[in-house]
Amino acid sequence: CTNSTRMPSPRKGKRSTSKSSSRSRSRSRSRSRSRKVLKSPPTAERKTRSPARTKTASPARSKADTPTRGKPQSPARRGRSVERAVTPTRRSARLENKAKDPEFKEPLEALPSMDKSKRVPKTTHREFGGAIGSFFMLFVLPITVYGLNIMCDKKSCKPRKMKIPTDLKLFFDWEAAAIYLGWIAFQAFIYLLPIGRLVKGQPLRSGERLVYRCNGFYAMLISLAAFGGAVYLGYPVKKVHEKFIALITTGTIFSFVMSVLLYIKARRGPNSKLAPGGNTGNVLYDFFIGHELNPRIGSFDLKFFCELRPGLIGWLMINLVFLTEAYQKTGTFPPALTMVVAFQALYVADALWFEDAILTTMDIITDGFGFMLVFGDLVWVPFLYCLQTRFLQEHGDSLPWYCLAGIAILNMVGYTIFRGSNSQKNEFRKNPYNPELAHLETIPTSTGKKLLVSGWWGMCRKPNYFGDILMALSWSLACGSSTPLPYFYPVYFTILLVHREMRDSEHCAKKYKASWDRYCERVKYRICPLVY
Ligand code: NDP
Image (tube, rainbow, N blue to C red; front, side):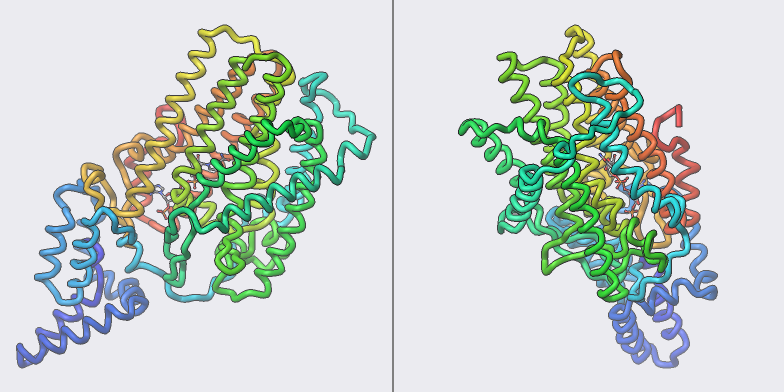
């Protein structure tokens, strides 16, 4: 067991044995000392990091750092050898044997390396251009959502000098406010229902693991049923289309208010709950990036709730409004529009079906919950990601069947890469000893976690981003080539993911040090094999 060979406690136990004159006495002393060490992992962690320890540990480390095949290091074998070697690692052996149980969900490798110092240090590194960049983003993000939706309307969808509508009712409407807030309340109500699995998140700095209620898929089904009921009962769902800009305004105001409240909550809460990346002390920056990592009201996790429900399911509902309108107008389901709605529905359903996979993503484990994520989740996603379907509904679709077939193939290739890679990493993080992943090569790291270097994650460093970009491109291709505006999504998304990959790579380089360099040497391409 890589972790155990690096743990200082066993070696300490051995050394004390050799120093003692009486073998039996030393064995029992060693045992009790070892048990103590195991009960206090922070001490063990600190000791592992001390230079003296590093020296003694170096042969093991160099061996460990070379990529290893999963199979020869089977948990059972390692468990046995470790158990024979020294007493404290009996616990590791027990845990490893437990890991063979497919139901076992503890990320074993994460446990020994947790940083138990509860205080979140001041953030020194600033992203997005620091406070000035964050300040501009507070305007740029809403203006982009308004701008694109005003530029691409029923009359025309071409980049042009924007004429800001003078009718204020277009921008704010109490009915739109009621629809938006009612939708958020409806989703919050479903989130609170005691249905769906309870899943533990990744260990926090304190070692604590938050519990999340994963009922997002049910939320989608209930929302679909409600939508069907509304259409059946004759509720004019097209109001959502008519009041689109007013809905954006409500969403934007809601996001600002929520972000301010989140910031105040974070300031009043304990330091240990802050996000490591959003604790600069600069109000503007922390407000934008997110001051608190996992803000909760009781067991209601605000970030987890916003990430996949009101915005993502809202996007699906808006698409269905467009499809319903097209059907009511023409009596048929236009092929390109129907296809894109179906692909995006698959994307949303997939995210909700694998809802617990979000618990290992950057948004949950690294980023705080501030304006960037709040606005992204509650406005950007629902009101911009539907640009292609709105264009197709308002301007009709004209591509021949063979183009649509090619687009469908591109979407499915993208989906296969996206789903395959995300599931592989998620399963590996949940249970690194999963027998189904035993054939994969890994690189151990000094934190105790391993990095996958074969399978999807050997193809490039972010195969999941690559698949996502292919899907985004396919949705826009369905809009034809008459205007560039529906291509905003894949262009913006590629920029976002390139930047995100750099951010994540920086985090991983800090976290995994030499092992990350070795991973990058081994897996050369970042997002697109042979290209980037
Ligand atoms: P990832 O799911 O790639 O998560 C990054 C983390 O994965 C790293 O910090 C690291 O964390 C772990 N990791 C990285 N490389 C390896 C490896 N080789 N082996 C094992 N673990 C590794 O990134 P995101 O959270 O950014 O994205 C998740 C999904 O969401 C993606 O499919 C992305 O396309 C999608 N997405 C969609 C957006 C949208 O708007 N539609 C926006 C952003 C993302 P650790 O080692 O600590 O576990």
